[in-house]
Amino acid sequence: MKRAYKFTTLFTAAALMLGSALTAAKADTPLKIGFSDWPGWTPWQIAIDKGWFKQAGVDVDMQWFDYSASLNAFAAGKLDGDMIANGDGLSNGANGSKNVLIMLTDYSSGNDQIIAKPGITSVKQLAGQKIGIEVGVVEHLLLEHALQANGMSLSSVTLVNTVTNNTPQVMGSGSVAAIGAWQPIADQARIALPGSRAIYTSAQAPGLIFDGLAVSPQSLAERPADWAKVIKIWYRVLAYVNDPKTHADALKIMAARDGVTPQIYRRYVKGTHLLSLTEAKAAFVKSDALASIYGSDENADAFNVRNGVYKTHQDVSEYIDPSLTDAYKGGS
Image (tube, rainbow, N blue to C red; front, side, top):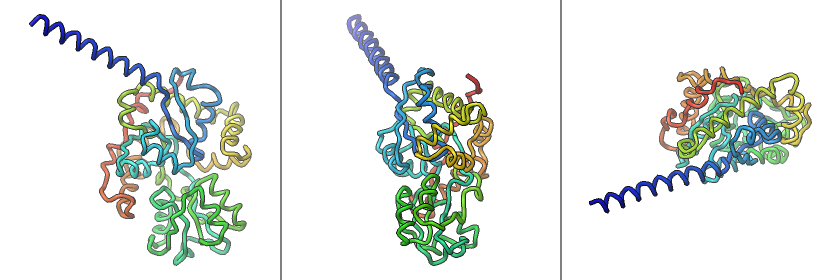
């Protein structure tokens, strides 16, 4: 019995040591986070350039993607987290890639746009027309909202499934009457077809599209302290963007990341409502209203099922964890 006890004790000790070693190894592995050219996410480039992740004691590998490619990489388990629009997180999860939103960066207030060719000046004029849209992604949601606001439905138009990053080429070809795109892709579409214009934007639907950081449940469970540091760094970035003393440098960094001038990027900032910590915490309060991430997710879930993005309604509460944002008190 003593030998059995001794063996069990040694086995348990070895298992504990192995578990500690694995935890330490994970902590030494960079958190891989995808981000793309949405103006609510480009500010991460400031933290990269300034070395703030290292200063905060967290190893982060920020990876730049076209947005759709980031969703695919996240779904494939190649990322620990991704900057996403809330409805797209539901789509990934419904198709097997569970994720949880732990931080809100912004809501779209004009940068998501339905852009029409010259001669079309209203949503109602889209009836019977072809629309280039990435089916199942956030601009699809905006298009439906625009049509419903004008007494129409998606059946009023013909959708031409187009990856959002390719919509400028489709717009320029003249094969569609309108496209859905976010900035800076929306500007590229207007350049591709001079005279085209935005006929509906997310400024007319505040809270329809929230954006933020979604992470894998496994990574969140294993490394909550590291994710808390990432959130802290975001609010340092936000302060740098908002401070009049550093705003010009912030614009310069973000514009360079997107390949445009600071003057152009200033307009993109205005079309994205970057959420203060107080506003983010308020948006994490449960409500059926679009001003709440819960209400916004419920609306997105209904859209996704209604339009065959996935078949079964999702429990949106499983996709939202405000605990780390709620715990952050602000400051350094």
